[in-house]
Length: 476
Image 1 (cartoon, one colour):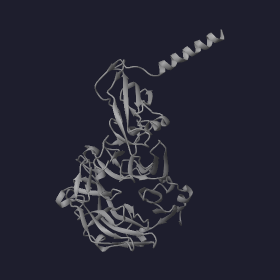
Image 2 (cartoon, one colour):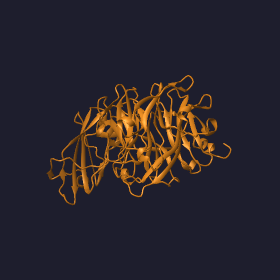
Image 3 (tube, rainbow, N blue to C red):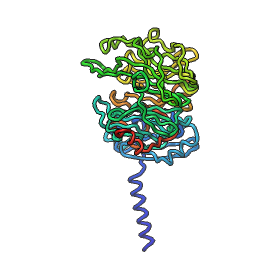
Image 4 (cartoon, rainbow, N blue to C red):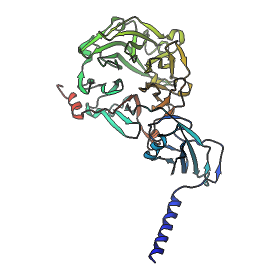
C-alpha cells in the first residue's frame, strides 16, 4: 500500500512538472524571433551577465542554449526568459559561440511557433565593472540622481555617491585614471560643493575656481601619471525650440582649458586656451600621456547661430614634467570635413580616435543626428562605424582597457532615455552592438532614468559614505 502511494505521488509530480515545464511548438517558421533586446547574432564578452530577453505578446516562451560541446541549457517563461547565472557562465567558459533556439506561444499562435535558430558569438573578456550616472532626462529634475557602478558579470548595482549625501545638489562629470577606482574625481554642485578628488584612495574636496584664473572645473580627464587632471571650464546654458526635431539646445557662452597639478595644488593655464577667441571642451589624454586632445571652435552668437558652431578636434604635446602644452595640431578639421566633432577618446594602443559627430553645436547628446565616428590616427582616414550607429543619438563613449570593447550611450529605443550599448572591436571592424543586460529585460524600458557618462573600471569603487558626507558639511 505504501509503495503504491509513493508511485502515485511520483506520477502526480511528474505530471505537474510536465504541465509547468517544457512544451513542443506545433509549427515552425524560417524567420528569426523578434526578441527584446535584440541579441540575434551579437558578439559578447566571455564574462557578461545572461542575455535575458522578452517577446512582446507572448504567453509562453521556450528557449534553449546549445554550446559547442553539446552542453544545453533550457529555460521557459511567460513573456520573458531568464537564464540561471551559474549555467550561463558555464556555457560561456568554453567555445566561441552559442546557438539559441526560441519557441513562442501567444493568443494568435496558441499552439506555438518555433523560430529559426541564431548564434551568439563569444569574444575577449571585458573590464568587470562600469560606472555611470543615472539622472532624470528632463531639465529641472535635480532632486534625485547619483553615480552608480554595475558588475557586468551579474546584475548587481551599487551606489558610488547619491545626491542625498550632498544636500541634494548635482553630482556629475566623474572620471577615472587608468580604469582604477582608487583614482577618480567627480563634481558636487550646490551648497558646500566642490570637485572631489580621490587619489590612491585618499579623498579631498578641491576648489578649482579659487586656485587659478577664476575658472571652475567641468569636463575632466586624468593624466596616466595621476599627477594631473585636465578640465574644460564652461559657462553652459540651454534654450528650448518651438519647432524642431530636437527639443533643446545646450551651449556655452565661453569655455576654457585648464590643468590641475595635484602634487602642487595649483591650476595651470595657457593664454591660448583661456582667451575669448576660441572655445575649448572635452579634453582627453592619449594613453601614453604625451598628447592632450580636445574640441575647439570659434565663438558665434548663441543660441541664434548654433547652426554655425562647428567644433574641430585638435591635440597639443603635453610635458608631464611641468604640465606645459606645445603647438596645436589639428586632427579633425570641421572646416574641411564638416559637422561638429566632440568627445575624442583614444584607443589604449594609441592608434584610433573615437568621437561624436553631429551637424552643429557643442552637446551632441541633444542632437538626434549624432553618430559615433572613428579615425585611424596613422593616416587620418575614417573607419566604418555604421553598425554601431542608429537613426537616433549616439554619444558619450569609452574604450575598455584591452581596446576590444566600446561602451556608449544611445537614444535608439525611444529618442528620450539614453541606454548603454556595448560593441566589439576586433582590430578591423566593429560587430553588432548589444544592450546592457538586465535581469528582467523589461527594466530597459521601464527605468525612468537616463544613463550618463559611462566608464569602464577594473574593480568596484569603495568609498566611506560618512567620510564623503563630511566633505559637504559646513566648514569642511
